[in-house]
Image (tube, rainbow, N blue to C red):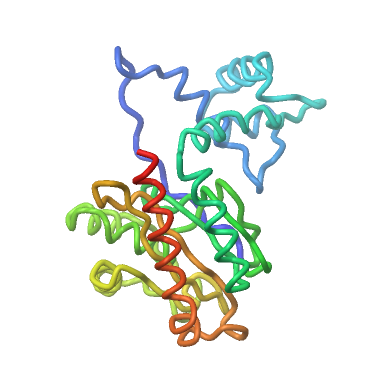
Length: 267
């Protein structure tokens, strides 16, 4: 399965006292690098970002001087220093240190992969992952993104939004049919999210990829607000959906409650 395409970005604000256009363009250049384009020429960066060659060149040279980009001949690529930006976010989350031991114990017990994700627009972003088997055709790790509408963690996180905001994101999201089981109709998806809200968990059966089954539960803060979702993912031929729900759901909810409790104690 090819990696889902990111949603089209919203038009940027106009330059002014509260918006630094050059900084925004620098972030656009950084985001133009991906697994599909790990190395780019100046012309490719300009084409991907919509910048002029002169504008793209200035930003690339600035990033190179700061150590975030390196060049080899005509090719530019990101350096490991770029990870500092992401790890600054992760290290600021108490979730990072508190959840990992609980997830490792859960993954060892159920012998399936375990992840934590947060919601960003119409996508989920993985912030923690304890893999046990390769369960998808794409590699998942910290920072990986998947569509929220057809993932168990996505529906749990969408369920925590106010009703109007949840509806808006479902309607705004690209909803390709990844498998024959993928729910794409906005009203049908709304009912699935409503069900996740009522039962406080969600199971998604082979909607993102054939054979992939995922079960998720919310992680909440002191005020009861859902801040992340915890999931267990596995293969349907190894652990059918009914068996996953019966065997793993109680343990998953217990682990999510343990992480939530640890967060409350930390705050």
